[in-house]
Image 1: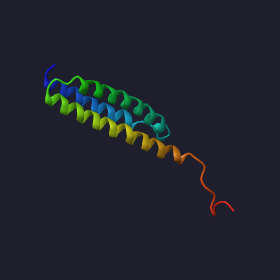
Image 2: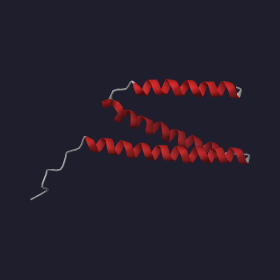
Image 3: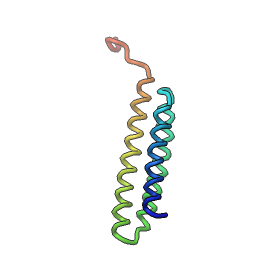
Image 4: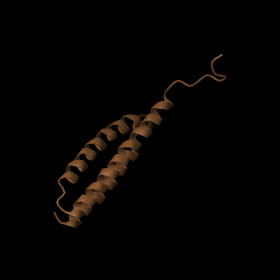
Length: 98
């Protein structure tokens, strides 16, 4: 495929992804974040594999950038999911334990 076709697919996928995610109700965001974290883990493994087989320096640089961004995305997704799950936990009683 040429670059224009790949760029067109990327732009269309961004629009479709935005429309799909914006229509999700608030109660489903935590399960979707967990699923997204699993997908980001797969992306991270793929980025590591591609970087490991890099033959030239540009592929290595792009692969390392992909590994860094996928790692940040994965860790950030777990942090956000943890914070969202804390909202559903029991609240401490005012005044503490007496």
